[in-house]
Structures are given as C-alpha cells and as structure tokens.
Length: 406
Length: 233
Image (cartoon, rainbow over all chains, first blue to last red; front, side, top):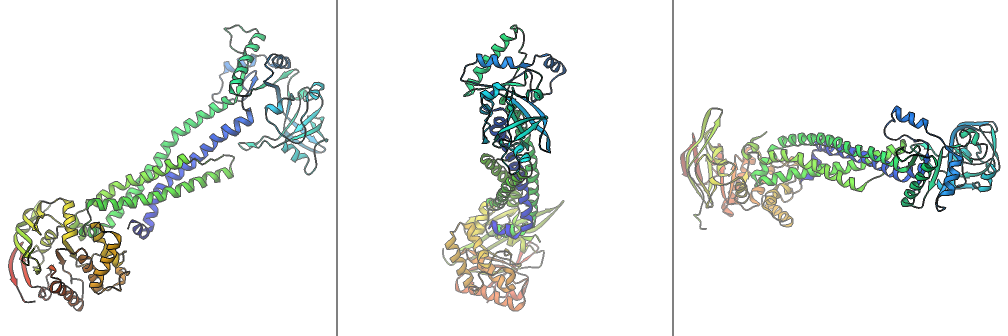
C-alpha cells in the first residue's frame, strides 16, 4: 500500500528521500576517509617512516608534530650537542646485541647520470644494519655489507624512482651515479616503498655513512640519528631506557638536568594523529547531526504537504474503518520506507564519494561496517521521527471534514 | 434477531456547531427507528440537517445531545477507535462522489475495508472478487477508477460497501453525480439488494424520483422530522 503511494508521488518521494540521503552520504563519506586515514597512519605511515618497534635518538625533534615549539625551546635545542659517530659506536658496543643499531644522516642533494640530473634526491649515509631496521627490500643487486662500511666504499643502493628516472630500460646495477658531484657505483635497487600522502618514498640513494656521502649529509663526524630496533614494544622500551641512562652518563648530566637529546618513535606521530582523529570524531557528529536535522525538516515538510494533499484519502480510509493507528502506521511506514531507501542510497553514494576522493587525491579510504550500521539507524531514525508529527496530524483528522475536503 | 429487529434508534438527537460566536443547531432533536430490511430515504432541502444526520448515523460524527443506538450499541458515547470499528463492521458507505482511491484498482478499493477488518489476503481477494461480481463488475477488477464510467465507479463503491456484510448501507446522494439513466441502474442495484438479500439501506437524497425507489421516506426540515411515511416501491 505504502509503496504504491511512493511510486505514485515520485517527485515528493524523491525529495523526502534526499533528506535522509544527504546526511547519510555525508556521514559515510567523511567516516570512510577518516577511517582510511586512521588505518593508513597506523599501518603504513608510522611503519614506513619510523619503523615498527623502532626509535631514533636525535639531538632534537626532527619532525614537528603538534604544537609549534616556543622560542626558549628552540634556543635550548640549538645549544644541545650534536650526536657523533663516537656516540653510535659507544651505544652499539654497550647495548644488548639482540638490538639492531644503526645511524642515519640525510640531505637533499643533486644527483646526475650522464647529462640527466635531478635536484631533489635524498642522500642517506647509513650503517649496513639500516636496511634491516627500515625494512628496505632489494629488488635488484644487493645491499652493502660491513666491510664496505668499514672501508668507506663509494657504493650506493638507489630507490626505485631514481632507477626509473635515470635508467629507463637498463639495469642500473654496476653503473655509476654522481651524487653531489661525486661518483658512486650502484650495487642495488630497492623495492618500491610506495607513497605517503602522495610523496614518493623512493627518491633516495643510500651509501655507507663512512663513504664520501658524509661530506654532503652532515658536518664532520656528526650523525642525524641513531636508530635502535627491538623485537617488540617491551624490548623497544627497555632499549630506550638503556640508551637514556647510557647517554646521560656519557654526557655527565646531573639528575636535576633534563635530557639533552630526543627520542623519536612512531608513537609521537600516532598520538598527534589520535588527537586529530579525536577532534574529527567530536566535530563529525555535530556536522552530521546538522545535516540530518535539515534532512528531517525536509522530510517533515514534505510529509505535511502529502498529508494535506491526501486529506480526502484519509477521510475515505477513515469512513471505511481505519483507526487512528492505521493511518499513523501508513504514514510512518511511508516515511520509514523512503528514509531507508534514502539511507541505502546514501551509503552507496558516501562510499563512492570516498573512493572518488581516494582515486583523485592522496587521501586514503576504508569502509567501516560499524559506521554503516550507525548511518542506517540515523537515516531511518530521522525518517521515522520527522514522520511522526505529520502522521499523527493525519491520524487525528476529522473524518467528516476530511471527506468534504476538495 | 427477528425481522423487526431495530437497527437504528435515535432519541432526541441534537448536533450543534459553533461557527465563531454563532451556534448553529443543525439537528434539534430527532427521534427515529429504522428496522432490519428497511429501505429508507431521508429527504429535505439543503440546510435541513440531513447531511448532519447522515454523518451521525454513519458514526463519522458524534451528537451534541441525545442518544443513538446502532444494532444495540450506544454509539453516542463511543471513542474514536470504537467508532472506526463500528464504521468498519456495521456500515457500508456509498458517497455522491464515489470516494474511491484514484490510484488503486477496483479490486484493491473493494478490499480496503477488509484490510482494516484484519482479514487475510486470500480471503480478502475472494470476497472482493465476489462483491464486484455481484454488482456486475467481475470483468473490471484491475481497472482503476479513471478507466471506469460514473455508473461503474458507483458500483465499485457499492461493492466496497457490501464486502464487509454491514448491517446497513448508508448512501449519501448516491446518484448526485450520475445521469438519469445511470441513476436508474444504481437504483435497481439498491432495490435488488433490499429485495433479494434483505439489505437495510438508508439513502439521503433531495431528488423525489430517487426517493421514490425507497419503501419509506423520512423528511427533515430545520433539524427535525417533518414527515415519515411508508410508500410502495
């Protein structure tokens, strides 16, 4: 009965459907994106950039997440001593051998092969353990080994994008690449690391930190970071505590003095993201709420219009024995059917929207079943709630007046 | 339930409307008894209160004063839902403007009161088909009102009124929108119903030649009964 009416009043049905549709589309679209970001931050971003169960000892924070540092903070950071190769050697000799320890220094430099050049290549000077710590797999050739690090051999492992750029169609292994005007022999090509927010992770050349690369990445004997990877979180925390006490002792810090070095972990970024997503999830219900309220008002108005247009029909039904609750039910079923259909379309459109955004921008998207359920309930709930008033108006119509209505 | 069972009994029935500050007394005390198998025409000029009276005995409206018993139940004290139930079980309406649902088929229109009576789908179909058959529209079941002539539409409305096997058929100017030939056809349907099935019929009309088909004519004037006489049909 209700569906017949819905089919008959296509335009009006369409508009009341829109009411639920917009809210649900919006909710699903945003949630899918936020969810995707969440998944992405936890699974890919943190893992790729920072490594799992890994921390990096730096003289000061390298990536700034969250608040902008104060001027005093900045000044204090600048007074700090830099980390030296000697610090690395000291820590590597003192720490439990189950930990992987390495160094990492980097700089943006120009690289060239023949007449082709590229400015924005990231040159890294590292220890041989770096590849295992950062989980950089080799697609062709090999990584460098300890003897090459000890001898300061000028060999490099290049990122897949560097390989594509300079060696289209030829095997780069064994060839020469000039990094900051110094030649290196390519011994390996890394497997692609993919992208983070649209930024390629494959535009690098990695050389032993003892090679000529040391001239371009950092002042003499200085390293950007000392990286320690443990088997698990507990190991990482233990290693971190060890490094802290070793460094404090080495730098003769009094108990009252704070650390003059910094630990960087994926937690920093993840907690920053957790803040953002918490804000998003607080603001989101309000925004969705507004769109659903607007949708509800649209549905209510259209239902009121439908009730007044169908006054005579209501009169006829009442004369044939329809009780209040029969009329109420009829209108509520209509409102529910429309909003359910609207919500269903909204879910499809929301997911489509999210994936469209995913396809056209670096934003990720992940569909969440839980939120789909929430959206359905919200959409249908809005339909029912905004249908109640018009339906009860309809059910209370006086049959005599309703039958006389033209 | 014998032949002379009183179906409708009103005692001092009044109905007043408040129009702004003015009180309109549409019915000023109507005493009337209608028995089973009667065929009664209620006549009167416009403003005589016949429509108000018809709404009251049709349980679409409740009286301001007086009592009304329908088939032994006192209707004047009933709640909305009880009135709806009485309309569904006891009364079959036939209106001047047919009052069919325009988008529904004949069969569906006839089924409608059975839906509200809680009758199952299968039985509903069968009874609707039988009712349409009985008014000679067995071949028009799936037509919509717009695809039917005026006379056919009114016959669908009669089938709808009959399908619940009500105590009385209440017809409000049933021929008001029909030409004279079609009106005669509808009157024949009513006469058949009354003669053969013993269906009680109360018909409101202002046309004398239509009222002439009834076996008793009650005339209202200024909200009271001015004459009540039997006649040969």
